[in-house]
Length: 434
Image (cartoon, rainbow, N blue to C red; front, side):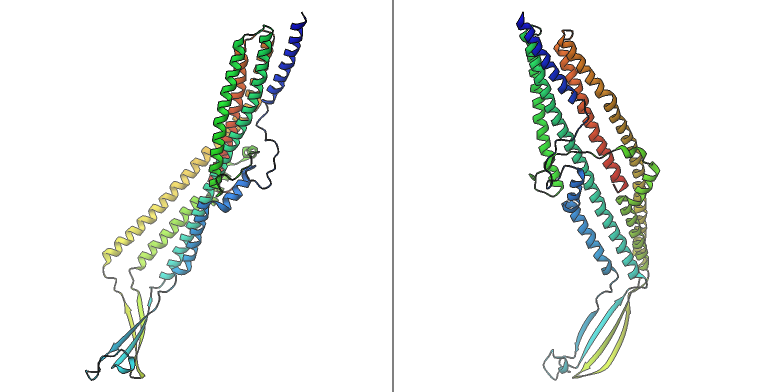
């Protein structure tokens, strides 16, 4: 008589422990334990963005391209280099001497200095075209930096989801270990079958296999993040602790965001610069209708004295107009194409921004649903299944199914949290600022 009573007391202690562990699963995704991350990036997305801004190789290359384009501005309106020509005339002095190359000993020596002068306004147009080209290069560098920032934010959300799922897997293993003790205790006093113990052990094996896969994915994603940051692949990264708050996005005004996107979106700015550069190119082609002028001065030396000075003016004749008309049509088509691409970018920007805002709103509502309804319901279902199993009113399969449901709900909640961060990052990419 005493042995069953002692076993039931032990059974009650095990069930209380299991229930306490179950309650920990109902809490929303929490930060990991504090760790020393003073010199290790990765605890928050801002530390990763700072590194990506300074060290990402792709972004660095685009910034150097923009610097090179800026240096081309002063080159654009520079005059062509002057040309010097030396002519030795009558090197045999009418056959009275052997040929010589010494200026004082030939019949005469002419020195010609010429400078080409483009048509009026050509140099200023070239400079303006180079300025818009530099603006386009700068916009492309900003777009690349924005793309890198987007990839960092998406990568951080993936790391966060993987780490939280690993933490959840550990908690589930602890719960299953206590459920195994509960099943063994009930089996020891004849209230359960050995099948219950075998089922919970099989469930533990499945969770351990999933943990192995998730740890591998975490290692791969950390390597990709380090590559994105321009760091060594095996460089340490802190565990991701926090996600950015989405609460303020509920007050966002779609029209205000659209105006900000028109002002700050780098792709749109790059298209604007391309349109203006194409317009200046069209104006430059029109200047080809007019001749360029070359002026020069030519002193002539006879023996050791310079006795005569000549002036010269030379110009090209824009005679073959069919070629120039073809060039003008080409430039007009390129300008029109640039304008159409700019319009397409603007339309796509508006559509993507509207879709992103709608998806973010849906994500916030889904997060609220998980937090306020689904997780509490799954928690109550597990508590009820445990209580019924302890008094023999439910089988162990019901307990395991309730455990799977709450675990599935937590995994879905983590996925929704990560997706919300991805939606926020995509909207920031479209707007062109945080």
